[in-house]
Length: 289
Image 1 (tube, rainbow, N blue to C red):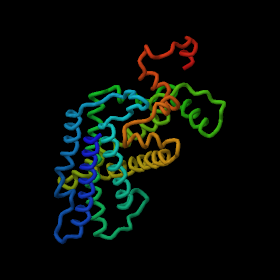
Image 2: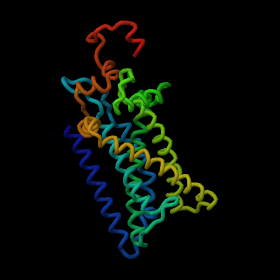
Image 3: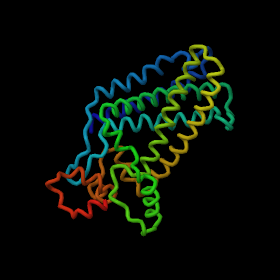
Image 4: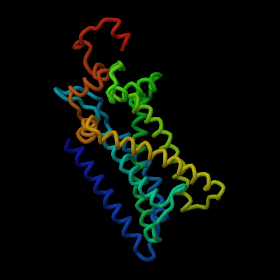
């Protein structure tokens, strides 16, 4: 826990200092835009994320007394670096103007927003490539995010029960709800699109890229960003609901209670329990699940 807090504190302080520097440098006469002077950090961030993943020792979920380790330190780090980077990118991107949304910033404010956008790009790329490399090294963590053939049906039933409709009989939920898995695909496509088009936009500050390439790239970048905004806002709204507070807490501590795991993620909890400790169940019950 101490090491996790230290890494989180260092990352948070570094990000805040970077934001402050990005804002102040925009108001210094003769200062370059960070996308021009610090372009190499955009290339370094993905490499640093992948390298950090290779040096990371993962911890699988496990039951520890009356609590369950749901997220290890690496999961927490990749979640917050990607999430905070995404949030700042969305805010500054909208402030700079996108698609039908005009920018209302002055020239110096545009520079400040661009510089803060740059710092968020570095954070976002590190967190995203850290997650991506971790996923390649442990593919079961990727598979558990993918929806099953019953994803749409179970999503309707899940939210139907939350709204008080008791006619739906849900099977034991996995580590991630089917609704979360469907949203994950949207986030995955939007993230990949934003990275590819964003790297093109960043490269345009250093090398000459034809307008016939930059025009469509900017349009696709903005559309993907709006898709990510929809996902992000839905994610935030769900997290703020009382039923999601145990999950939100686990993104800081790594743990949920055994009671919560049994109640909300019974299918996942069953797999964590040793077979010898599990009561036998009728064959028809297993088929129904």
